[in-house]
Length: 359
Image 1 (spheres, rainbow, N blue to C red):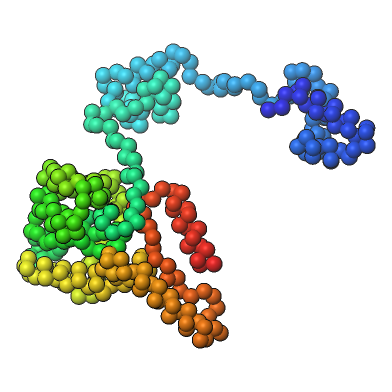
Image 2 (image 1 turned 180 degrees about the vertical axis):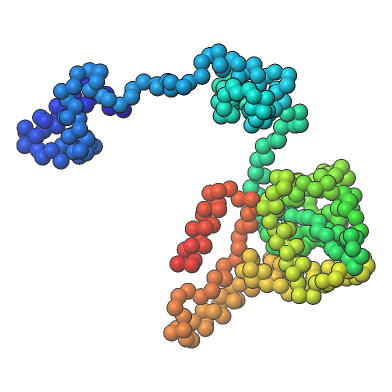
């Protein structure tokens, strides 16, 4: 807020500039002032202090403000034995039904807040603030895994089998799986033990991300991870986006054209079908997120050679028929890094890269 004294000084400087030959518009521009504001200031120049600045320079106290006694009454009522466990949204209607009106709901909230009493008032535990899991990255296979369990329907209504699926996020290679008739932390630990043996995982080499299900956080699974030197990572409760890779894989799994719509007849049939799917996914499926190579090729480190050959074919085709190409050839650069729950800066950077490619 510009005080009346400051206004007077600024108008004096502008008047001096005008007398020296400057234009009023130029003088106002230098002091970052509009000519309309200068006109209004000059119209008020003859008014005496403190009426010269008619904007409110003090804290306005509403005429209908609660008195100290009324605020004490609100606090006493809210903290009484009958209402101490209730929020103002419950207190005010209850009092109104009894023919009593002390203040509005917003006034209750405001008074409680000023007294630092606007907090959880019921007996159950306060809901905890869940922070986003830390951002993780993978630059090579066997650095970052994701796993989850999904239901497999059967021909018997109400009965399910359970698919345990472990995915390498860098290569999208399914590194381990099994189908059981129950959810078990012990069985999950056995699958992880087998993966580490087969992939020759060293201690502190892999981070294993999952949701907060009981098999994921069971004592047996945690003990197995500690023994193997695998670092666990968990999603926030009820936030499926924190484990997007496993969720996307399960959608691919259940939307296969030959997925049994009526369910599996027995456990052996379920295992046989999943085995066929895993072979197709790892060795035949060209995955879009890794530039259309198979997960098995990328897991073995063959993707660089394959993409280089693919790029050479495209460039040769472009040289042979340049009039058929309006721009660059298809992107054949290998994906060098994979993010899990990236920070906002990384998301913005990736968005800019995508927009540049589209342009």
